[in-house]
Length: 365
Length: 168
Image (cartoon, rainbow over the protein chains, first blue to last red):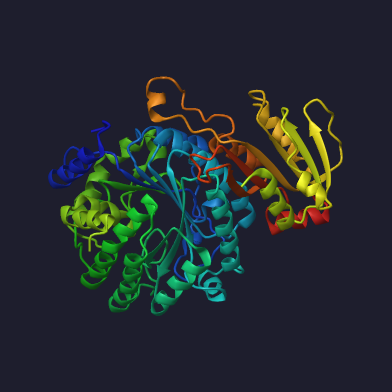
């Protein structure tokens, strides 16, 4: 089914499709990885080792057109997206061809000169959407540089945050976020890292993600995922802070509201190693790899097909037989993970978690 | 708060000694307080040729709407005369309302002087460090005027190094 629907009808449609295996729709949550190349050498990620033929701008134009403006949340991921000198043009295409409500760009802040050149253009090209710029801060000062395998990275991140704050003076659609990957390397210091990062970067939102074994990141054999009990302790302090310091910006407040429930969900998934709520990766959320492969999620990174082999028609891959096979596997709960991006969508599609998120948004305790 | 007072602050903050003031239309100069503080101020009006020298600060302000399509080039041209700071002050029109767009009274385009219209051009010129609202109200929607200060020095350590080495 390839028709534009109001959001609530679309959400109901995903539940019907999940239950029946029929009436599939295009995804509302799309991640576009624009390259695997990355100058960082993080202890929690080896994505930089992967080399592929990245999609060109003209190829993205053809793909995005086939998404019929359905995605409301688009994440532009990497690698380091700023390796691509045409990143602002990609954002422009996303805005014109998809017109999502939110464009989210996680940033490592390494290639400062390129960032300083491109970010103002990205801000201009994303007007009409909320632009969430999430700085990756895994530790404080030199320890951050060590974990991320990049000299002077922390110092550069501070400079980029300063630039983003200046951009916010003329572009009110920008949200400055700080994002920490919680791994075995830093799980015991999360309260201190969160406190110091908030003070140094003054973000509109502060969020975390669990370091996971992901095919996409080439981290399947790395011992990086924190012990579930340690993780639960770490995120309990984050929840306390969120409750005590709610943002006034709507998008930041939405993210906080999702986080208040997500942290418990992630802890439970780590503890029980099962899908605690149904996963809609492959129904409502999707990922386009840099070389055109379409995945249901980046944790499994299993190709449903390549848009280059289907005349750049996303739907031709998404509604194909291989995609049905992936969805059947997810529905059979053959996997479980706390991937935040997909979890957000899952939570909005589960009535109980949705009710809690709405209550969090309203400030009901 | 008015343009004269913010200019005094910015001149001190950014270490300005020389000023080129471009008055669009027939309004008064806003740089008298700078001259009384010992800064060298050159005032230029539309009907006068500009000096070719560089200035630490170039200020452009006034009420007359620049010619459609030309104002971008005019701002960029003026900014090239600044070595530290470029200041633009103008009226602060309200963006077209949703109702106006719905009934066809507006095509939705950002009007001249609005942040939405100016921001891409100002960020092409340099780094917008300050954006203040002037007049009786000091909030974005109701202030009658606003001013931007754009830092035109090279944006990154790498770019500053290139300038020192004469690469660009």
